[in-house]
Image (cartoon, rainbow, N blue to C red; front, side, top):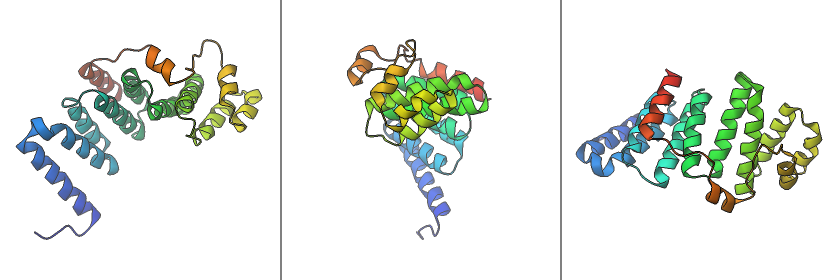
Length: 212
């Protein structure tokens, strides 16, 4: 068989192979195949198809894989401009895996996008998420750009020096008492996020109602 000659043909060929594999043994390979197809459709910006395949992959998944899939669903929704729905997906991820810094970052970005489009009261939750991600992963220095932007958007110019100096402890201490930021991984693992995971099918229906 002649190999595909360009990237688009190659992606179509790979997609057809995945679908063929799933048809032979969906129970065994269905989750992996749907995940791979979701990634391929995301690359092509076919976001609705990507959402379909990630949702199908949930049926075959358990444990940490489910949390990771919800993070993928959140990212797909966010990339397609549906940040309000993305919040639900990221919150589901963190209810299952509260010590996942990337999901905290993604949740913060979703809040920030809503702040730009709809309501400035989303900025403080965004900052809380960025700081939580930094508590979990201090090496993620790129987050300080997001922190600085959020501090400026809040008008907290007295915090700007803390952000410029990357003073995580100082910023966490400066946050209002009602804005709880965990002191470390152990606290998050012990207390979680205060939110229980929802049934996957129920949450997918809620998301569908938001984006339809």
